[in-house]
Image (cartoon, rainbow, N blue to C red; front, side, top):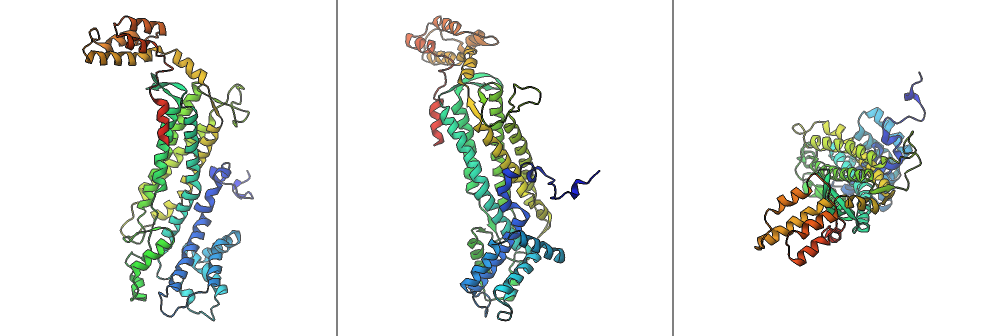
Length: 469
């Protein structure tokens, strides 16, 4: 049997880099291994420029504007050739961060030749432990992935749901609590509930903090102080971290504690769970005939039953949300713990961040495509309402309660009387109106109740959609 592992080009082990690559490809620029190395390179370059531009180490010159531009260009030009070169260096160093340091020293040698600046290269990775570079790199990666890829896609999906809610605000819907016919609502209001829930989580994610530290091997600035004792290293550290667009964490061990990551992943997982709820609800509405799948669903629903169009987009989304949440949950639970001043569990764990976001992004893509292919079927919703006049037992007994509280005679035991009329059997509009007529209600109340239908008994549901803003 031929080995698939030897195939060229290499075959992806996971679905994200196989059949679903197109949907998640934008994350590669942020959360892949090469993206990690590019951000490490960015941190090393910016640290060198920070030290030299502020004359932190006495006697070291400031790099010219052209030299600074060329150094930053090293980061911007980081591509396939540079990835291969860095991998070759790492095979020698057996250390990923050290390989980045040596790679940058090579580039610096062509930008600021050593015969003119013999000691300049020693400021690359100056007083840094690997985690000074790694924690900042991961913060930049995750921030970029969220702000540039995940959040815009998730927000667009939420907006799609909000638009559907607005479009369907007045379409009556038989609610189902515990799977049983219940007080009518509107399809728009029910979708608005989900859009509102998604929006709350997106606002939390949009205001997330991305923390970083640069303080040495155990967070004490020991090496920094020994090298340049006159410098205010905590202030310099804060200025540098903030210059990267991150929040400074002043109190850490060797590692930044990753609490911000756990907080962010919990919020993304909660968004995922609300989206999962949306998918299961819409799937159920499709099964009830309230939505028809009419666009973009392909021509094959079942391999043997030609009449079927399966709601596969929502089912695919559900599965990927569950995989994503399993990863986010374990990331959040694991990253907040490190033995004493450092262990390596976080290093292996953080390599799964891209996969967690990838499955979430894939689910968003599927939900988006699924919703885009739906048309509401008001006739099907109306038919279910017409078949369930018993749901109007609620307004009748509520009106009787209000009259009874005002001292009107004959309003005793309203709940029990409506229960006897409606529980366990279907009634018609004629049955209900006959019951109301025999209650002795004031004429205006009797008229109001007799004019009610399951389609009109929706309260202020359409108005509630406006709270989406």
